[in-house]
Length: 183
Image (cartoon, rainbow, N blue to C red; front, side, top):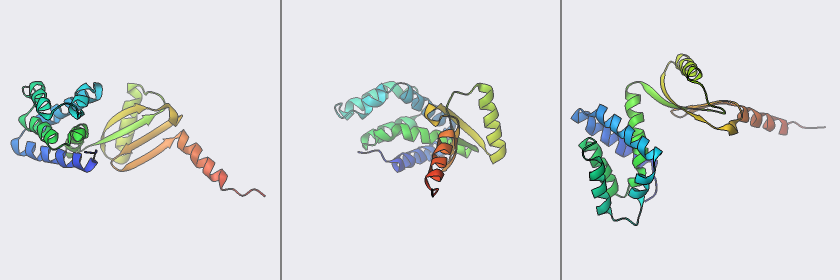
């Protein structure tokens, strides 16, 4: 099956609702985040789970061996269900959404900041405080570096994008100059 972002959202919400009823939201939150980070750091397990060459029965055995003693039964069951329903390619996005939904329920909004060069801890803290005070929201900001933006900052949260990059400003200037009639 193909990746479908709506599928990841459905699984994440179902897992969190079950965790709320079981009183294990904090544990599921921490474990889902740990597995997500593991998938991002080392893609071997994800490639194994997504491989069409490996029979599902073998994948289920590996899931049990790797996770049974380490994660909440609800989270373990989610992985098995997604594998059984041919939705395992949505697992890392589902785990990311679990993190984001729990943080949002705690009043913390996931966000991303992209800069042309890495920021120091002091700069990150100052930027985070400035954004929080100006927007009156608390953010969990993931910082990344993209030299292609040339300078400035791109800030994303929820469905909003604030592009203060030099690349954006130059593109805007180019569009205005292209629209100027020359006599």
